[in-house]
Length: 99
Image (cartoon, rainbow, N blue to C red; front, side, top):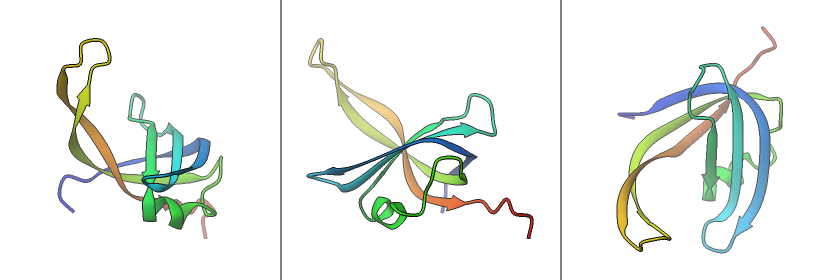
């Protein structure tokens, strides 16, 4: 996959919900290995459903993201602008057992 960025770290917070439009949704925050790396991620749909019972706080993972552009609307002015966002394509648990 071109332009995929990988970020590794320990899951510090997980929050799961059901969205009427996207189905399963998981919000995840990492204590990242790299200082100042992106650390909050949203998983939706099939990816969230697949990982619902797999991810746990304290688990080390690698998050693979691709860049995307999303149109956002300012609540104050009603004007639109493009914003760069990271779309999570996969989350892979990192084996720390040394085996």
